[in-house]
Image (cartoon, rainbow, N blue to C red; front, side, top):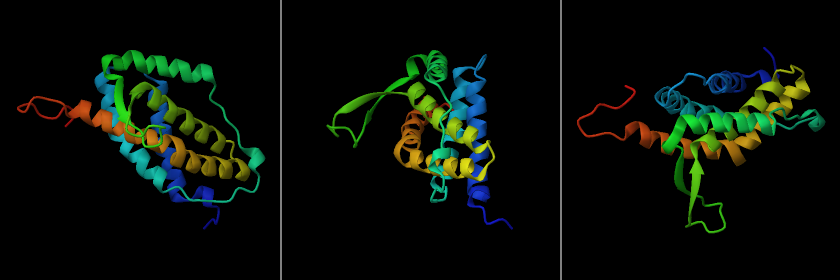
Length: 177
């Protein structure tokens, strides 16, 4: 059995879920808002759980860390999602990290989903270089970004999508069950 922490079950499971998330967002053509919301409703809690399970490790070669997603790729996905989300895209949040922690801020599902995509796609692409240094940096960076960036965004996404999916008249069944 390998002692390589980058090949352990929690890492491989996040890679699997992250790959599904990225693949879905890269193939949005002809998808309806209901299909996108259903997918997001199911995968976001799983991504959050898998993110919490990433191991903490010390990177031997930090110079092997890389980013891959360009601003143009980010914008293309953002605008595609924004078009699909339509009037369901924007919502208000209270951000305790904001200067005025009691002042509502406008948020966007498309922006949050795209930010998560960027972090996870960079993780996948770096990990796939398949050297120990690359895998190690991918795991470490993904864990840091989960704590500071994409994990936090998942909580906003979950809250908004939960409300969209479950907003219905009392006599109607839930939308995706």
